[in-house]
Length: 109
Image 1 (cartoon, rainbow, N blue to C red):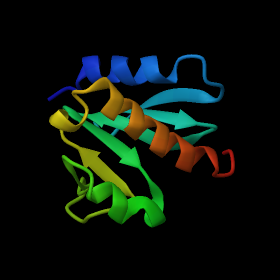
Image 2 (image 1 turned 45 degrees about the horizontal axis):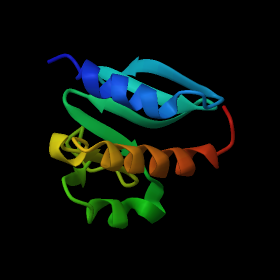
Image 3 (image 1 turned 90 degrees about the vertical axis):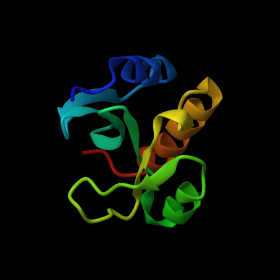
Image 4 (image 1 turned 135 degrees about the vertical axis):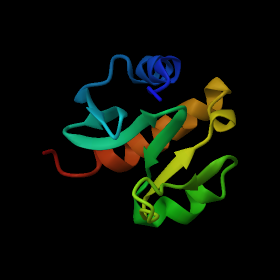
């Protein structure tokens, strides 16, 4: 299944005007990078977010979030957000802001 282009477009809108943002096709979808560090993406119809190990448990407590188990094993610091969790623009903006804040603090690649 191709990735949800509408969700990717909405993420792009939230990133408009920010410096250091790029995108790359990965995981069968599209990933967004800040200064070379992946911070979120769209895989199938879900938002994939990088919140880091310290933010992992808090992210999982949010509605419609689940562990990222792309390889069959959960990846600490990464979560998938199911479509209802990004249907509201404020919820999507919050996810994008949270994962961008984490990854923007990482050293540039």
